[in-house]
Image (cartoon, rainbow, N blue to C red):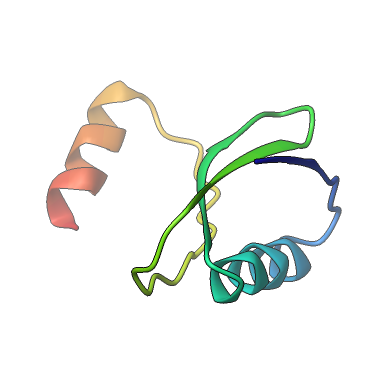
Length: 66
């Protein structure tokens, strides 16, 4: 399923994505144009938005921590 939605507030965006999860749809892709792709799921997830400006090395180190 695809939905088009543009947000200016990351907190509202995160809440909307998690509302879709409550309906049984997991976000699997998000374009910079506001197109969100979801797939049906029965698992329980929580999505958190994390905006970071990292170079490749910093990103790899950041991912290794989590």
